[in-house]
Every structure is written in C-alpha cells, then in structure tokens.
Image (cartoon, rainbow, N blue to C red; front, side, top):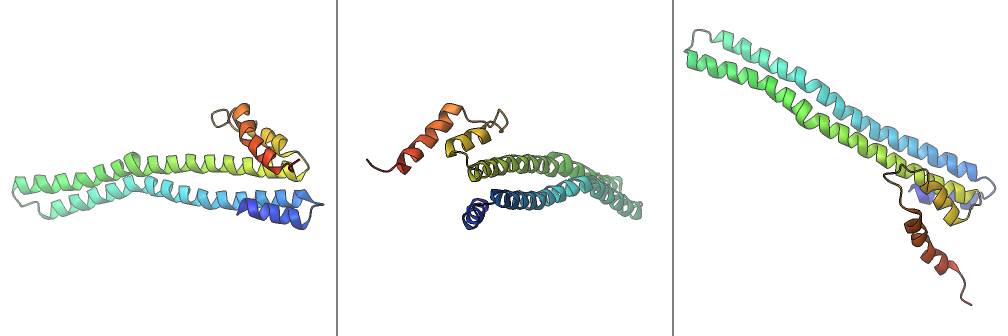
Amino acid sequence: MLICDAFRLMALDLSDPQRADQRMMDAIDGHMAQRAKAVGALQTLADALPALGIVAAVLGIIRTMGAIDQDPAILGAMIGAALLGTFLGVFLAYGLVGPIAARYGQIVEEEAIFLETIRGVISRFGEGAAPSLAIEMARTTLPIALQPEAVSASAAVTPLAAARRPAA
C-alpha cells in the first residue's frame, strides 16, 4: 500500500515529489507507532507476571493458613502449590513473554529499516534520480548486516532496465 500510494501521489502531482515523500514518512510513522503499541503491551504483560505470581503465592499461603490444623503432608502440598504461583509468574515473565516481546521489538525495528529503504528509493526516483542510482543510494543506507552487495543489487536491476528498453 505504501508503494502504490506514493506512486499515485507522484502521478497526480509530478511537480512536488516532496508531498509523496512526506506522505510515506507519515504512513511509516503511523505503522511503526501501531507496532510499538503491540510491543509495549507484551512488555507490560511480561513486567506484570512476576507480581501476579507473588499474588498467587500470597493467596496460597492465606489458604494454607486457613488449613493450619491439617496434616503436615496436606500443608506441604498447599505450600508447594502457593510457591508454584511465584515460580510460574517469574518463568512466564523472563522465560517466555519477555523474550517474545524483545524479539517482536527487533522485528519491528527491522521492518522500519526496510520501509525507510523503500521510501528512500521512491523519494530519490521522484526527485529525478535514475532507478539504479536510487537503489544504490538506498542500499548504502542499510546496516551492513542487511546490505546486499552492490554486484547483486545491480544484477537484480539490469534485467528490469533491459526489459524497459524499446526493441531496435
């Protein structure tokens, strides 16, 4: 949708490529804000789980104290169940939900990088740069770990440029 909207704006008003660039920046910002809310909600859940585990333990101990006149084997099982609440809260927070929230945050950051790269290519193309130059300029802004080699990027563009040339 980002790409289609940008080219639609550029086609409607070729005199102002900045309008399409601003629209893409707004769309990316809105998309990333929505994703950040999801990451924040997961992180909030991870932060709350140990406290819920403590509440479960306290309620278990209260229940155990109500049965203090029971056999020690029964009391031991009740205390064990109470402590299980704490363990479960901590395990879910730091062993499951927290790492999922962190990884989802990394995915959102990587998605932002790719969306910004797309925006850069389209913006430079709208400003009049040749497609291969626009791609090369955007390629060099990527982090080194995500950056394709120049040879492979130009090899991907070459068949497209050849297909656009009129037959002789």
